[in-house]
Length: 490
Image 1 (cartoon, one colour):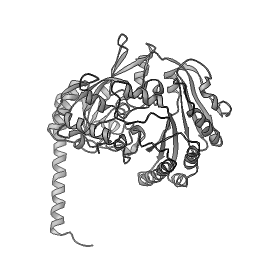
Image 2 (cartoon, helix red, strand yellow):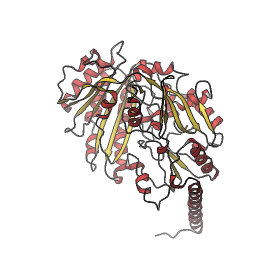
Image 3 (tube, rainbow, N blue to C red):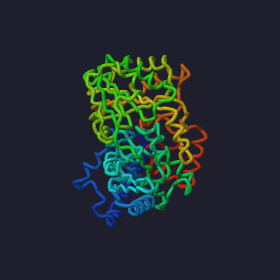
């Protein structure tokens, strides 16, 4: 074995010294904040630390922060941010912890700012808004508002956090009526890198208001969202379960459903299938935002016999609570977008059900893949563009599909294989849509893998606006350097 040179040894000592200094800085900061916030600061020696550091949904993003800080108010959050920046310590911010992007909602070393204690819901019936803490998950928001028979445009999976979903755009069962989740924010209460608390809305800091609608964690930390509320409570729908053999019929029905010239905006649907697991098969999530059984919008699916039919009249919250959520150890996902075309639908169906990568994934320990076929109508895009100055996403107002491939596996040793096999499949989907002329250059952040160029897909003009906004509200680039996880500005 070759012996290290004197230069290599010196470099090693310098790196070791820098690492030790960084750790010392982290611990000194944690101690200072703990002196002020007490039990709201959890350090590695405390009993609560292990559970909090592994609370994120996927084990791929579990980490070991130097401490976990849970501010209970915007004022405490302001203190935490300004102090952390003063010490030049890296940090991450967690709302619900559902993201699979490493570093976005947890961190090794540095500080994890856990928003869980900023968790209030305040409903204003006169203004038809709800002020929602960013530490909440959608289940808590919906159940709080159910007593008033109103809801908000929010997440479909109820254990997902309010913060990450909203700042990434957010897909909702109400999208065809009112746009994406981000389009229904009336005001963002934001803590900037200096600790200043600012409100971003249509009249105050409108550039920041626009940028936060899809711009993620690049400008500050949102402590509270003021969301529009809507008089929607009772609904019809649920899940229908099919065998994998029914997939060709389901894809044909989906094409018919998505090709209607004037789609019923109260109807929403999502097809999920598990081509690596025939025992689960395919699941159709059906939602109608009125208490009307078997509306005509879902006619293309009527002649496909399910193995089980759980659709019924129920509240919208009950409907979403009943949706199955798989328990997986390690998770990643990839997103692709394309417009409606029967030949392309058939080709994509072939890829997601028969690609050789599926066999490679099943050879991993507990390896599995599911796809989600999410129809997006032009009305959803137009509603967003018409709402308070639009959003940063650069969406085209055409009927389209946002496809997501979800991969799950067991062992850290298979992380790269799981990533690479699934990336190969999404590349095949992209290549097919590009070849057919139906590719949509948009990557949905909430369904994207860490190495997908999400913000670049918003278009050069919007990226330039986002960068200008970041320079204005974060001139020292704190949210590009100290908060370096998540989807950063290119």
